[in-house]
Amino acid sequence: MAKDTSPQCKKCRREGVKLYLKGDRCYSTKCAIERRSYAPGQHGQRRKKVSEYGLQLREKQKAKRFYGVLERQFRRYYNWATRQPGVTGESLLRLLERRLDNVVYRLGLGSSRTEARQLVMHGHFMVNGRKTDIPSFLVKVGDEITVKEKSTKSPRIKELIERASEKTPPAWIEFDGEEAKGRITTLPTREQIDAPVEEHLIVELYSK
Image (cartoon, rainbow, N blue to C red):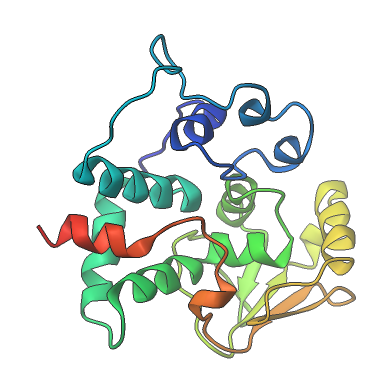
């Protein structure tokens, strides 16, 4: 499986916004964008005039990095979104939100999407009672995501469950800390998706 191994903090600096790719570090004084809020590289501090295409490209890159998706897969999501009823940009974000690794992160069972993806791949979660280790698995309304009973004995997962129990999940998800179980109650609306992305620019880019 293809994997992006480039430095995470440089991605936030390049996009000029926190993408919360490093979990707890992003909330601390060690956050790279807090210390160096300019783009990485020799010419990062220079002001550049950005073209219309450049703005559209940056929004696409930002969305890819926020959800941890590579180019080919992101394009497939876009093509899928164009066939969905409603606004294409919102459909695209809704598909990305429904990824299992993102849902695990939204439940609070991962400090970042990277950690959530790793936990999913290691087989710590079940969907509707069946082990599911595919991060891109798309959940639907009514699906239940549970931590495997054996996995609840892991110190790290115990800590994540305790932390998740103290948080309020997004309105489209329910979480039961005692049973370490989440449930999809409805599909997310655009107002419930906090992705720092102007999705209409992505649609404009792909529509050329």
